[in-house]
Image (cartoon, rainbow, N blue to C red; front, side, top):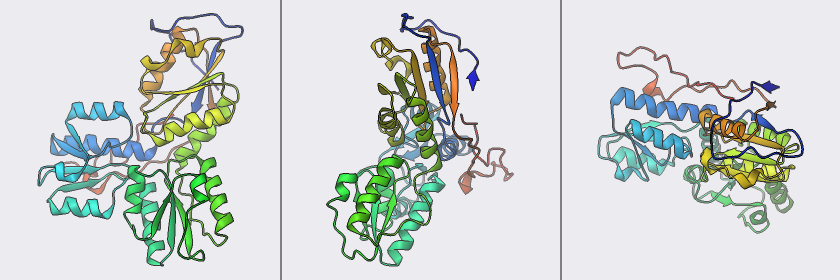
Length: 346
């Protein structure tokens, strides 16, 4: 559906003529998902409730702009809980933590606020249940990612991480009759299904998780960019390099017809040469990206002649999650007006 013409701003990009009509295909859904919204609001409310500093283990979400803005408000990001002064408030990121991290925080007397996305928590519970039933768990995901570390930490003696479809061809299990697959929530749907296909060729009794582990927002953003990519000469994905779902959007765009695709954190990373001969630019953003960063890209593109914006919507999203229990009431004990996350998402 058409979007009002975006006013151009005087930026770095020049309006160089191309053969056809310049336009932007704007993917929707894009940007913040419910789990990210909940986590960011949790840090903001913790700062309001308890005052600065509030410590956060790892990046609350994988976006450099969000982290920088929260640092300005008084959040201090640390790698591990042993960097947090005893007795302080610490927020666990949206990606989740292992029981060992929870225990370490408790040992230091930290007042922990768990901002783990509920969809990640679901995968944690699946890992615990299958481990209790003595299944070997093949966890499809990226080794070293915080979410994978947290999930694997629920049952380390039962979990083997499978990094890629190629890795599926060589992974070994103890008992092929008792094996199940789970996945990181932010992966490429297509690549994950290819990994599962290869695993099942080797282990025909491989069990599926009780419900889809890849989160709704990751899937929705991939479906939208597939539709955009077919008609785009160039796709720009707004998102950070350590954001798995943002990086996947670049890959999905290239796999589904985009002639070129790039990821940027900020508008000033968009290069003039990317626009050479380009009539149609696709734009989207990862699930941890605030809409203001997309708006800045659209304004810069408008200044380069890409003023007509058509939204390509493939799904509606209205899911919201309750905030961590410590933050659902205000200091006076009354239910807070933001007990549910919800800034509005594209």
